[in-house]
Amino acid sequence: MRHILLSSFLIWLNYHQKTWKILPKFSRSLAYIAFINSSYYYFFKKHILWELQSNNLSLKQLRVIHIFFITPLIFLLCMANFPEHNLKLQIKHILKWSIKCALVEFMGLHTQMIYFKNGWNIFWSWLIYIFLFSFGYIYTKKPKHIWTLTIPTLMFFLVKFRAPFRKIFLLGPVLFLWKRTKHAFFA
Image 1 (tube, rainbow, N blue to C red):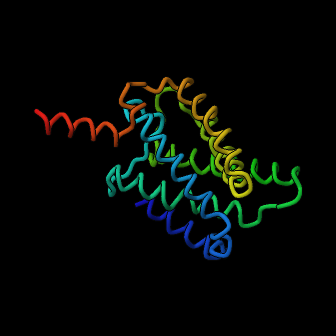
Image 2 (image 1 turned 45 degrees about the vertical axis):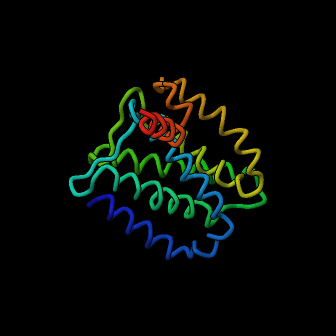
């Protein structure tokens, strides 16, 4: 229930800030953010670093709410008053929003809305919010540059937190299912 209240509160804040006006500008960034957020669950499905909790919603429902609603709404709120032409103010703005989000997540940790495992802590969450806001903003201007930065950033987290690599991860789920179906068909 608390995740739905959080979503409702974020919807209200976005309505109040009129973030629908900047939605066209950031739509590709939001798709990028959802993809990266989903990638976490793909690469770390056997070695979870954080997980959402609820008594009322399934794990799948929670993940969908956070990937497609909560995280994009937070990003849009951050971008609503983003200082476009001053790098110093941009850095300050991103740090301010990252601290706010980490504090909210810290409260979520203490109210059992989320838990951390396998070496993850609030510092790493704070760092992820910095990447979220800065990469998401830059993505609107230089998407290829951000993909170039995303690969080593992803690799860092995969190595740092010992993502369980198996051949299936490298092949991807579609190719795995195709091979599985092909073998079943010929058997």
